Image 1 (cartoon, rainbow, N blue to C red):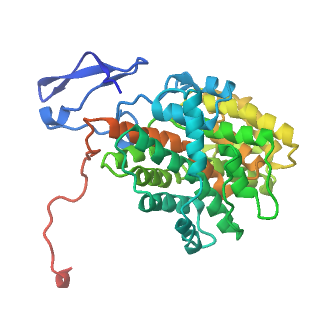
Image 2 (cartoon, rainbow, N blue to C red; image 1 turned 45 degrees about the horizontal axis):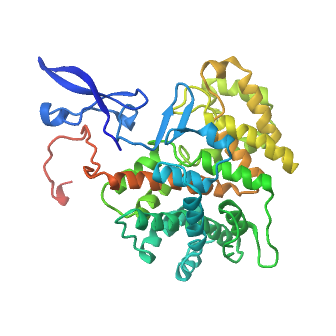
Image 3 (tube, rainbow, N blue to C red; image 1 turned 45 degrees about the vertical axis):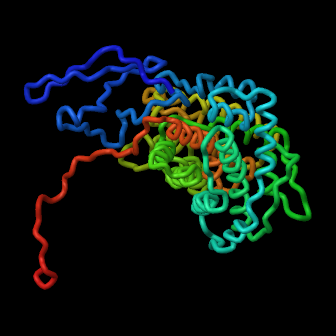
Length: 432
């Protein structure tokens, strides 16, 4: 991880004193003012609520250009990975180690994932302790953290890191499938070493002891693509959380468990659920698409179009372009008879044809199409965010590694501007 290149200085005048701050530039031309020593030299801090203008780290993993709709993993365009049908397994290796695996590395990694797919027998007992209606994200976060008690990861080099990463990446799908089975009262299904990563997940979710589930090629390919496109996305809420926890030297499982909790929120990983819930409301109410479009444009109505627009992208989300085609291909191949799916396509077409949305760059985002794909695959609504978490796990692992590989890493410790009450005296209870 190379330090950004200094290219000059910026001048900041405070109380008549001019301070010079280094200006640095990243490998893709992003410019930043380095304020690392601002408080030490001036006594001031910056205020940036929500960190929208703050670079919290230097990273080699993922690059986003929101203005031009660009997303790259380790310099490789997301479109290239999708077009070449990169597997989720090799994409995970790319993120974790900075390069695509050769044949030997790919084979070894796949074998490690197969060998480590089954949960420790005693871990299976934990699923009985969760209530039947417990949310799968709560179960996933808890079980990933619990993995640290069964497999205490002492990571000292690439070999020990690889084993810990393989265990987490493989077992996160076993945990997901087991939590789903527990929620519907069906027995847990063991992984099969002969199946690929994605097919094994679908097998564990949908097989029963008396009937093996065989996913179609199109279904496996669509879910693989879903995982690849969700594998990392720069310093989002959950990834920043993983780095925050990692900076305290917490183990890999603890940090990624925290990432699951951060992803759970509806403003982050839960957005794809809200797309389907919106479509269900439209269908139940019988509201026409033109009426919905007009309601969205009326700020007083309070109606929002879920799955459109993005915090970072001011252009079409490049992942959404890829998933749109994947959704169309999947629905055509599966002959799915689901009234929500044509409703979604009608809503998409209406929004893209309306100047209100086009002028504001409110294009369909990755959550809009991913929700459609997951529903077509038969994934239950409360498992949508779990699927997102499985896909995002390689990015979390890569960011944890980057933090721990940095010999100059300090614990994350943001500052604040206090706006509470000034000095107050303690009052005895009888006088309050």
